[in-house]
Image (cartoon, rainbow over all chains, first blue to last red; front, top):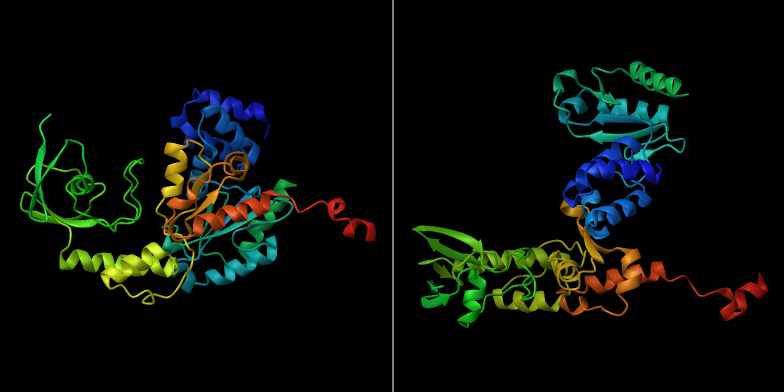
Length: 154
Length: 208
């Protein structure tokens, strides 16, 4: 992410310190993660101490300080999904993407996370790929959905 | 402005508007224990050791004296059985994090807290925030900060700022009720200071 884009985002918020979280959210959504250079720039322009930015970015789960993949995979491990075989879904995800929960593959294709409930237990086991919900996923379907992602990104 | 009259431990105490119960008690010579209060810093209410029983308008509640504003007619009791029990449990919990803290052990003796009641999870920090607040409010350097949240919350130095500011200051060290702060700094420093160049010892490079 280049400095110009970051400056543009900051300018859109009139360089106000109060807009810190909004600015960070925009950088996060455009870039998938918050590189250190971006944080330094935000700190300088909004005149917010770095310690405060680090406090906020480590507090909210939305922010990532490490690179994230192009495709975000969330596997629900809530009780309902768990009894319906979320563990198997996660295993398949691990097999196809090669990464476990909290990890990102070196090609930056996938980031895998587990979540505790997505609020649609009737669909369990649920997997969310790039914001799209896949309910009642079987092993084959899981693999298919993920493979489609790799194909479309290539 | 006229003084506010409130009652602390049966004693009539006059307080200035805007004063907290803690400050009012202090001015009257009544000691309330605390671990996170510092006169130069804004009240924070992290440690809850200053919890007191406060009667306001017929309702009794347990409040942090360092945050609760002194009100007219407030009746405060700083040492009831319940208050003491709360402090005891709080101390026991904190001691599971910082088992060797002298400040904590001293208070534990006073309140009969058992340092071994809870399983030890030494993070050596009780998250009182004294260092974080001192650095931000008094020194305005913002070199140390809280990271993460919940059970994983911890203090850490921002290396880029620490390398410039901390060496000549270190004013936060004596504030720490445990020894965690110094340890965190030593760690940061060790990460910042590159190991001795091979040339200065002469051994490794010539052999390599």
